[in-house]
Length: 225
Image 1 (cartoon, one colour):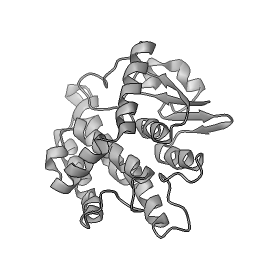
Image 2: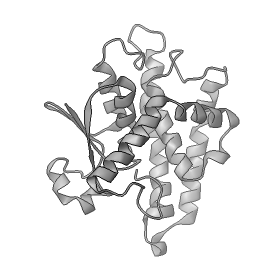
Image 3: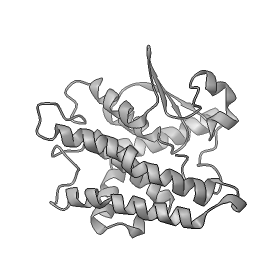
Image 4: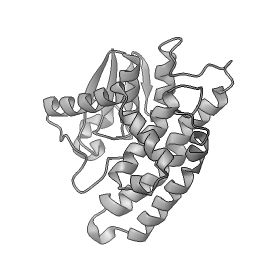
């Protein structure tokens, strides 16, 4: 069975959401954030001390967007993947990795210098600068939605929407949603209404309760990125 090592609302939420969309059986191991500090034995599983860590037999993966792509390959014919012979295959790959590399990256700096650092080390200007950087990078999402399409590519909901959707989830914790366009806000509402998204939220909450891990992100912070 697949095992996903996860912190509440961290990047590992992407593969958790995918597992629910694909209806794949899995075991969820909850960790306190950051695990490299509060769960030192986790370093034996992942020397980086970061989540996600996905184990599937001999497979071990730590990159959230790559895990989404891998999981989609585990279910042949799933609509969550765009096949190489489909016109939007390249766009699908681009969105899948843009969600992490382009959108989540600036948010990590907002989180660190706006919330994670001790008060004396926080840098409000850095947090604001990278908030603006993140918002500027959403122009591509706006352009994709400008046609009236409900999803980013392939004419359907795919793993690309999971990847980009997680960045919007983090943005909500950072109070940035009201600074986004109406089209993106409506897109985020559609994402939140997906049954698998709601199941993933419920799964992490229940697993955190069962395993004695805080059910919310670290105090005075947004989600651990």
